[in-house]
Length: 380
Image (cartoon, rainbow, N blue to C red; front, side, top):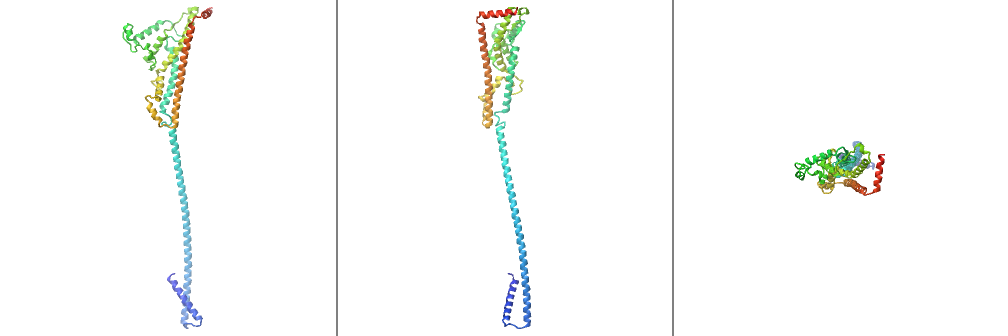
C-alpha cells in the first residue's frame, strides 16, 4: 500500500470518527469553518478514493492484459517448442533411417562384392582361368579335326592311298634320313656324312610323346616315325589287272589291311595332335599343346608352380567363390574322365582290330573258297 493510500485511509478514519461524535450530539467543534473544512476534506478524500479505485481497477485491467498476453506468449512458446521438438525428433528419425539405409546398402554392396567379386566370389584368377579353359576346349576340337586330316595328309600308307611308284616315297625318306635323322651309327656305316640335327628322331618313340610346335622339325619327325611304322604306300594296279581275280584279291586284302591299320593310325595321330602346340587360338593356350594345357591346370591343384597362389586365394574366397572353384575342379575332372573314356575306346578298338586280324589269318579253307568264288563272280 503506497503513501497516498495510507493518508486517505487515515483521513477517512478521522472523518468517520468525527461524524460519529457529531451524530451522538456531542460535536467537538460547532463552527461553520470547521464544518466546511470537514466537508471539503471529505470531498477530497472521496475523490482520492475514487481515483484510487479507478487506478486500482485500471492497474488490474492492465495486469490482466499483461498476464493474458504473457499466457498467450507462453502458449505460443510452448507450441513452438513442441513443434520444434517434433521437427527435431522427425529430423533425428529421418537421419537415423538414412543412416540405417546407408548401412543396409553398404552391407548389401559389401556382400555382393564379397560373393560375386573377381577376387573373392569367382574362384582363382577367373579371367585367366576362363580363357584357358575356353582355349583348351578349342585346342581339343582342333586336335580332333587335325587327327582326321593328319592320317590322310601325313601318313604315306593311309587308308585308300595308292601311288604309281614307291620309289618317290623311298627316295624322300632316304634324303630325310641322310640330312635330318642321320645318327652317328648311320654316319659310321656310310649312310650319311655326319649326324643330322634331329638324329634318330624318326625312330624315337620318346620324341613322339613330347610337345612340339605344329609344323616344326620335331613334329615332322613324329610323322616320319609313323611312316616308318606303317611302311610304304601300296602301288596302284594297272587298269587291266584290277578286274582280274588276283587284282580283286589284292584290293580286298588292301582294304582289310587299311581297316586294321586305320585304328592304330587314328590313335597315334590323336596323340600327335594332342602334343602339338598351336598359336591360332589367341589365348592362354598359345604355344601350349593340349597335354601341356591340361598339365598346367592339373598342376594348379596338385602342387605345381601356380599352386601356392591358388591356395592363398582360397583363404579369401567367399562360400560362393569356393563353390565356383569346386565346380571348376569337378568340370576339369569330368573333362579328363571323358578324354580317358576316348582313350579307352581307342585302346579297345586296337585290341579288337588285332583280334580281327588274328582271326582272319587263321587257316579256314571254306572261307578262302568262298572269297575266291566271290572274287571270280566279279569278273564274270
